[in-house]
Length: 412
Ligand code: FCB
Image 1: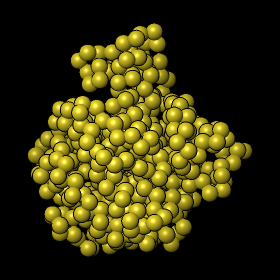
Image 2 (image 1 turned 120 degrees about the horizontal axis):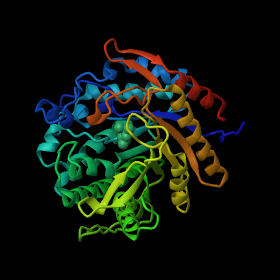
Image 3 (image 1 turned 45 degrees about the vertical axis):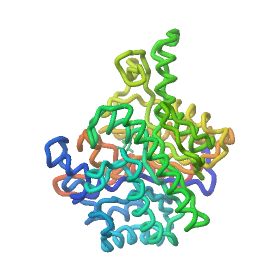
Image 4 (image 1 turned 90 degrees about the vertical axis):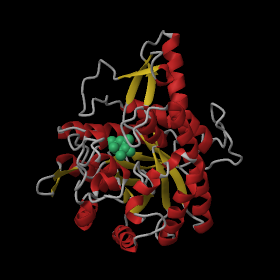
């Protein structure tokens, strides 16, 4: 048996919109109502009403950390009108976690926005950053005694890509230049948020959850595939890395106007898969993304299972010498053995990295519950707990017990 460090965190991640239900003031719901998104997120896992039962599962699973998000539209349904009852609801989540010695990792923005903010142009406009900071100030004040780990944004790259280049998530635009502008505004907003959190909470640990897909050229001997891989990785990953962990204020296309350096106290990584990149002049960054045709297991998302990519990602971050948290890693499958192997193989890579002096401090499986997988609806099953969406009954899956044993022993 190989042991993890004593204080290693074993957790799970969730996000408010994907589980709570009743988020009628969020932009995703607004798009659904207009028929622009074909999901039905009215109830989701009904977590808003069942959060106590759901949180009790964490203990049963022997977990000592939990990453969750606040729904901005729930807390601030109208501009500058805060709903104290909903803030209390999130406070009771944190209390339950603290009472059970489970470390809360609080995400402030996980893809969705209040409708009122969307209607003002959301993060497309730099002058709108102040609205997010107003919300942040409120939350920092409410949680400054209880929360140490702050994840300001979830996956800025995926958020921008899905909303402004692919056009599947709100606001469903296809405008890569705007995508880059939004990314810049989010990094600026992050920077301001970092300062506010630290002004209020000295010992806070502040960062983001960055989605990192491991990209490799489809044809190893093609210069064009290498070029497309480089470009895609640069825009998707490297801009954020340079800004957050190297203190650079670099931005392409003349969008750079930041004077101060962005900072982060830890490196938060969401890692799922590898994609191969083939040069295609008609695609964003000239990059056509291809799932390795040789993959043996096709997950419900069609993704490749590639734990070796996690090793590469961790090696890439080693030089920054900051604590690293894997804030999401998971598989959508109906096969419990596959999920167990997925968890085990990725934990093995993490343990190897730790022995090579890479400072990984925690692992969060995505996700606790089967949930709304955004535009893909309820079909992909990421949970280690099954949710029957008709009865809302919860049931810990085989893989859940498997993960619980690892978390208990802190060893694989
Ligand atoms: C990530 C998202 C998360 C979930 C997983 C599968 O990109 O952060 O909300 O949908 O993918």
